[in-house]
Length: 257
Image (tube, rainbow, N blue to C red; front, side, top):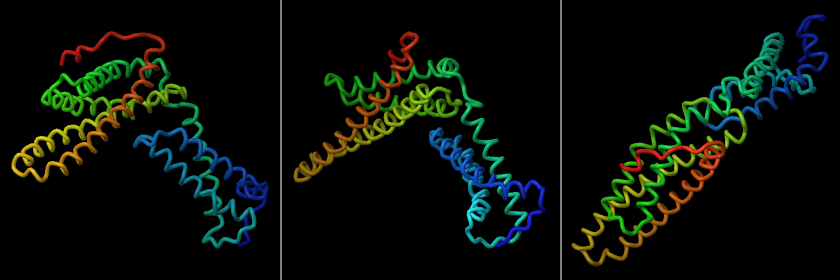
């Protein structure tokens, strides 16, 4: 389709001087950087969607400038969409990359340090109870229940805070979030394992032939629980190194829970 932009107009310069191609490349690069910068949270979904829409808006006219035959309803419509898409991507993407709305590392650390102290203490307590052979089943049940009740609100709080600016702090935030998610998931699995173990013991008493199958299934899930807590502890250790880099913090009273 032959475009009919009036010479000397904004759209004429935009198309004839290959600015649309430059705008398309810039829009794609901004979208890629914004996607890489995001942490796949709900709060980051909107900028990602807006950047994708901007790329799609610029694409048709950029392809036409490259010689690809495309049929459009209105050349002015596709022209203005292209122009607005490129400008919109800059409005959304550049502030995002410059950290607009983000917290400095010190601010983010100050806001989240208490949550980290509490979560770290709970995770240490749960891990010690599950690892230590001297603790009984009831104590282990209480430990997993504590993690299931206390860690989700902390996880929600961490997700709600604005991101820190530096890559190192962002990694700490992601490690912290992953650690909490893994501890919660492993605690739920351990909790269910305790319930099934109680049922299995009762079934074994009633029907001795089910003993081997029941124990094998429990052993597999026990290994899954151990692996889950181990991976969560690794992420928590990475987070701890960030928080302890500049200052130490006092122990949490939750140790006595």
